[in-house]
Image (cartoon, rainbow, N blue to C red):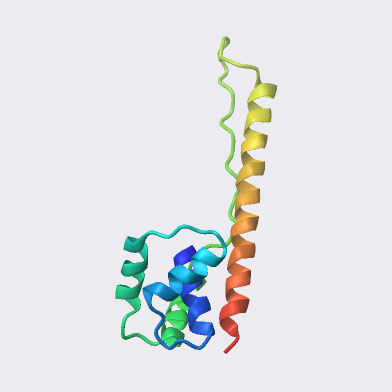
Length: 123
């Protein structure tokens, strides 16, 4: 993702077709290490393509990605027989912590998508 962001920054700076050195310079300026293989793969994939068309295609694909909302996983009901393992209160507490973590991941992902959407809407 950081390589893509650096490519977009280089393109926004006025370079019609950013090179590997441009991406490395941007990443180096903020202390990020970069792998040449990732940079070369990105450059190969975007070679000869219009950046605005790539962004438009990506926005269409992102529109089909679920961005939260969905249902909450239901806990299985305790069995009617005795000796079923840990206490129901302890199991409920573990599950509650897990749900909180999943919810915070969804929120940060949704916020990231919103930021990307705002960036790409500007032409």
